[in-house]
Length: 521
Image 1 (tube, rainbow, N blue to C red):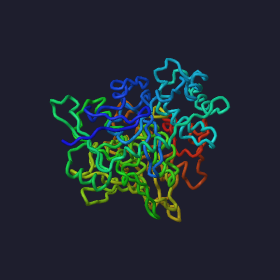
Image 2: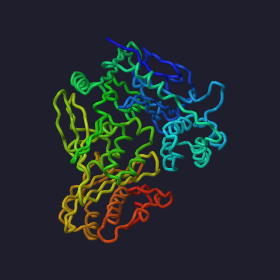
Image 3: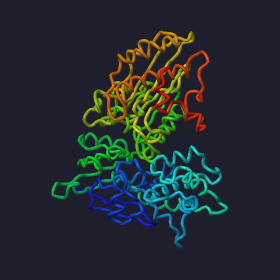
Image 4: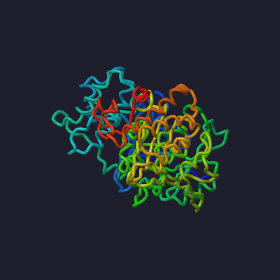
């Protein structure tokens, strides 16, 4: 079996690694192999943020892009050709603390200290990515940067203050990474062809070996997928990583999508927004929000920034989870998926893609290549809402999306309603849509549609919510949508979103508090 070493930049030098399983995590390598124990292990599932590191890679322009990610669920071979930065990298040669670290000390933002390195790296990514002439980041930007760090021993205020104080140039001279030097080093690490890494099975060499393949072109990826239909497709590892760290599954051969430049593109024409399958969730939601600002809140509340920096919209779609937050909005917007097998492509409506619980219409050897979303239309009224027990980084109890195309006379010409968390798949509400189509958009129609939801969904009871609660929330979200989009005196955001009122968050589109959603209309 042909194999290559994993090559990446770390602590000022090029590192080469071989002989470890393809599913060895970056965190395991740091703590157990090179003894960089500043990075901590907490949840091993990408939630707590104790393991946060920063990965640098060349963007489409050849410049260095820095992103905070969770080391506990990233597989080591995905670092090939990239740079890895940990809390140890921030220490100056004379032992002085970095401004990020000093600010946390001065603001008393650390208590037991276990979670502090993860906070430091999230803050360092914010520090490095903030333009020097842009001033201080806003509170919303700080909250987003820290959304993947759950521990709050000292409360929010000291950590937020430290995130502002680290930019105090009068006290701390700006200390920034030599991005050009790192970018020049990474250029020398880039592959000319598919990266193949052969490694022993996670259970040991006696069980055989698996191969991690990372092609560079779409044609090469399609050919490998057709030739190895049983290989595990890997994108951001934000779900597949847990199969290893929590379920201890053997993934077998792995086909990595993350190096295919053609699948990282975002294109627009007059009719369609096309998002490649390897576009990160952060970049994909930025593109969606440019056309549909109503997804702004869902964007910030989809997992955390480190998860959105790693995970992909294509992966979220292909996963087929009934609680995937992307799908209701995309179903309501009449999105399509582009599927490819070898040299052939086909396009399916997204609502025909899901055929059962975590089952899709993908054939053997086929993969999701792109998502196509219609551009905004005149007279479209669209909203999406997420209801969960926690504001940041939580799984939805109910996720809803509503899209109505109104005629000139105010009647509903095309209604598309979709929910996550209400069925075995992300699902449209066919009976409710039938009530709406052809009817005027008024209070009577909205109440009839609310009652029709019971014919569309019989949700389960689980640890997140009861069946009755989910159905009531679904009805009341539809009522809220009516209040926001009715022709006569629609309610403003501050009248329907307690978080927008309390935190001053302009641009949010939907409720984020279950207590608001469950109030009876």
